[in-house]
Image (cartoon, rainbow, N blue to C red; front, side, top):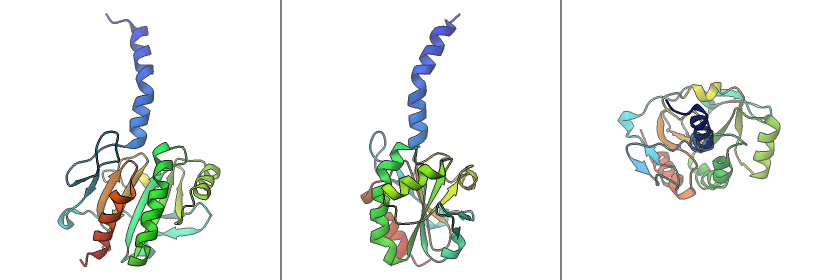
Length: 192
């Protein structure tokens, strides 16, 4: 019979690693972009025929303004799920701002979704990282749950929604500028 005290100690030692893996959401299959393991997240761009409709998203931003993503119909929308307590989210913020700056003139919008977070800390995150686009406040995670099956249920995750409102690409884990920029530009040039 195993020593239950020893088993508990081993499990407690492994817990931080499990939590870190949950925060980074390292998964990926099909059409990979990036690297697996300790590098950037593995991304996946979906063939047009394989794209599923994105759920509707609306709510209140961190600054208290209403936002309905349906008002962005006909544009490419990059959705980034993040939280101020998530270390990879801190690391990727500059990269997301870079891609936003380089693609906004091409009809690309960005929307952050701050999940399971403290609003004061989230606002400080946006101010410190100079986030140039709005973020919906998703304190209870209900907006993230709408993407169950389309996105990992932990931050960071970035989705690219095409002009027809379909999930065109998924990047679980922190993204690098070069990793996200090319797919967003290609999806922005699609005509149908």
